[in-house]
Length: 388
Ligand SMILES: *Cc1c(COP(=O)(O)O)cnc(C)c1O
Image 1 (tube, rainbow, N blue to C red):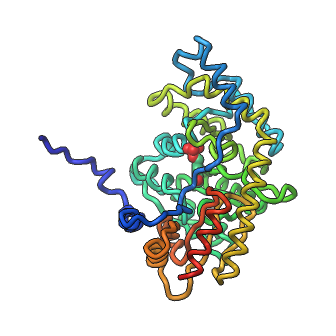
Image 2 (image 1 turned 90 degrees about the horizontal axis):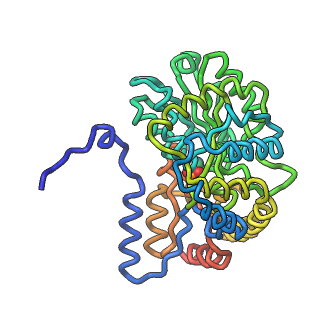
Image 3 (image 1 turned 90 degrees about the vertical axis):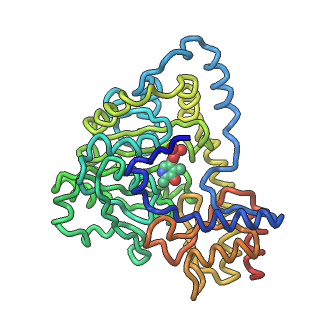
């Protein structure tokens, strides 16, 4: 057998911080302990039936069996533009300001290839979805992390970024509603971000995957696309994954500045051939008729959130009650490090939590609970932790 050495870009990846947890999980499973995983950010609820029906019907059409266009069907891009108008009152030209994605992760991972040269600086708000940093490094860029702190409501402290840093930055990644902290953005925050980005000619990348997982219909998360000037400097990534329980379908979108959309399109044109059109037609159905179902899912998450929050309060675990996302960002009890606490809980109770530092250094001192399991399991999990 020949040995093949991995490319430097792979061997240079940071160590996988969940490795210790995975090992502990395997040990616990071997002991035959019942495992409850609160670690996964993947909805447990099924995709609504009408979306599946739309797929069946579309899959039967021979015209959908051929190569799709990598930018997406115009009808899909139109549905995205209409959805953004309805939900955020944002005007988007479906021809030039929307591109389809094979899940937003695909677009996020490819975007830096279009704009980052080796050595360029990319700012990443952290704790963060790991793809931002990895994609930057694959493109040869250098990541500079911006800490998200509780005292700033986990918003990027824009005033703390020096002019020198702004001047050398090529792009900045932000994510609201945030995974993992569950924080939401405010309009003044986005407006200031846009102003700074315009001043220093920096691309703003907004990851908005969780805008539809909210708990108060009178206080819905906003999109940066609602803000004046967003289309001058921003590209926003969004997805059908979390809103309609479609993580397995691989369909998302990028919207915003038309030259940034075209730049991403140039990469995609060379690496993929778009999304199966039947999936796009199902996506159109989801965007056009999915709202009542999304409302139902929100009600389920809200019940779960309230059950877990009450149980955590009872056992003295400090946490923020989220306004959005299906995560609870909790403080590790006094005297523990994130990884120690999470490993201890797992070994003694079989409950899997995610250590905050796995998302970046400022996540130390926290752990994340995902609300993607049934109420009964959530209650059982917290009750096991309380007996520790
Ligand atoms: C789940 C998630 C996504 C969406 O991923 P898809 O590829 O669209 O399924 C994007 N960003 C964050 C932060 C996420 O948690």
